[in-house]
Amino acid sequence: MTADDSFGRLDDDDYPAYTTGRAAEMLGTTQGFLRAIGEARLITPLRSASGHRRYSRYQLRIAARARELVDRGTPIEAACRIVILEDQLEEAQRINAEYRRAIHSAGPSLTGEDLHPPKRLRG
Image 1 (cartoon, rainbow, N blue to C red):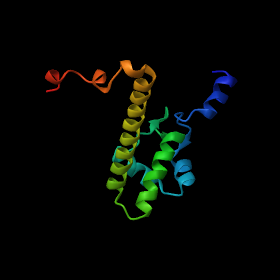
Image 2 (cartoon, one colour):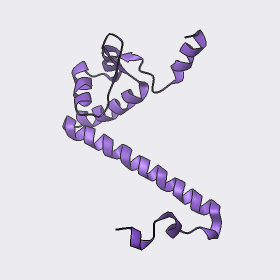
Image 3 (tube, helix red, strand yellow):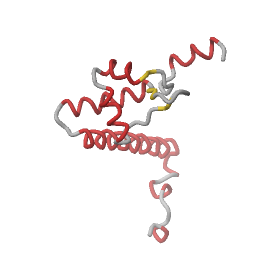
Image 4 (spheres, rainbow, N blue to C red):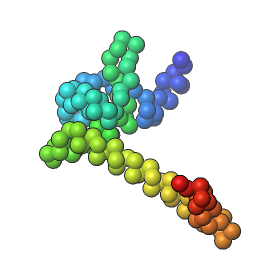
């Protein structure tokens, strides 16, 4: 690995750069909280060669969203489920926006029915 490769990782949101202790410190929470949201399958930290958990900046943002809900009294399992559902909704809205842009850019020749199978195939 070259020095340029190492510096490139500084901007990588998915690079697992943070130990459990450092991640907990950054979030103002406990290591147990991070383990609990891992057990709830909200985030899955990568493991170092020695088996230690490592977290990315993206995972820390997800954990921070869950922590906000827990701090407001939401049980941890429910907080994790809420965050997962929020992410799924955001992704569905992004896909929907892409479809709308495709329809708009295609003009009047493309209709909403062109994006769905014929009714006899829909089940």
